[in-house]
Length: 326
Ligand code: SAM
Ligand code: SF4
Image 1 (cartoon, rainbow, N blue to C red):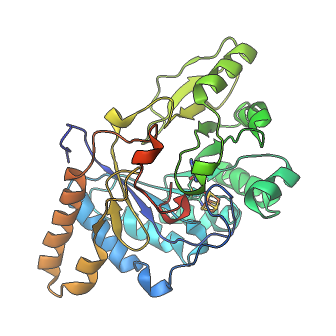
Image 2: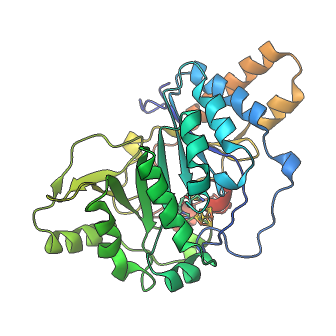
């Protein structure tokens, strides 16, 4: 459906948990309380909301977290979402640690694509960034996903003085693999506010100096705001998600739903529309369906024209990224 600024909103990001088996400092610093399980939407409740979204014209769903693959039976949820009439694509964003063991079931359930988040290829740095020693399992997960023939992308967030010297090693993962490597600018959400990121503008300059034949890649690679470039001789492409230095709000196509059923019109603002109250409070399924559609329409109506990341004092979102899903 169209929002007040004429944008087609057809993409819903669904967080299925606030829990994670890693502790990326900019996303999930130590000391945040876990939500009690009964607060999370059940798979039935997620399905009911996704069905309402599909009736309104939503076509693409992303399952995220926290770490989605730590929740039990996520492949089952993928299968449920894939069977909803109108839904064309169901994808997952994961830290990759549990991907190798679940990829068979995810593929069988009909998963269309996977984004794996990985900020470094150095084991000791991986431990520093994520608080764990799981690099090998992430690399195994990426390979398993490629071997299964699932469209796979890698998302990396560069932090100044932490891993910004590693852009080329990350980029080279796309050389001989059908893997798009995407650089996401650090956003001032949660602990990201206190973490210095790297501007994609500066990064593109560095890449272009090292690879002067790099050129724009016009092919559509997915649902989102990434701008893609191609380096001759590379199998995969390189993408840039420049929330700060390349505002892409005029092409925003999404709503986000937290694991507790709060629909977020925009990443930058704390404004939400609650669907859990509807899912748990209204007995008549037909009335519930109508109320869910109305709540989603309201969230679309409340989408602002643009985010305000460049003016940190205007950001009203107080949740951490791990509670939102990215
Ligand atoms: N656990 C899964 C993962 O790591 O892909 C899914 C959830 S995680 C919140 C989704 C993405 O958000 C990850 O790629 C992570 O690097 C990114 N992220 C977290 N905090 C961020 C921030 N402040 N700015 C930009 N990206 C952030
Ligand atoms: Fe967990 Fe993903 Fe956040 Fe890292 S970025 S702490 S893997 S939710």
